[in-house]
Image (cartoon, rainbow, N blue to C red; front, side):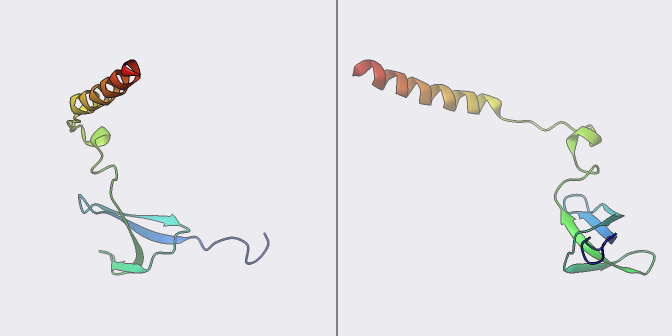
Length: 88
């Protein structure tokens, strides 16, 4: 391998901000935050919004999505465009 062409591969902690779930893995990311884990070592910290601990697919919790409101908005916009095109 050529020197100075590959990024540094190091241990990093990923922390789920919604469930406070943390796990250590290896990554080439270079975060500025650090955290001290249970083993007493200090690791770089990457904060994420969703992980397997908080994602509905993995937790089995369903989230309600307001699709009816979206459909009604679409229909009302389409109806307005259709009325203006027929009035011309």
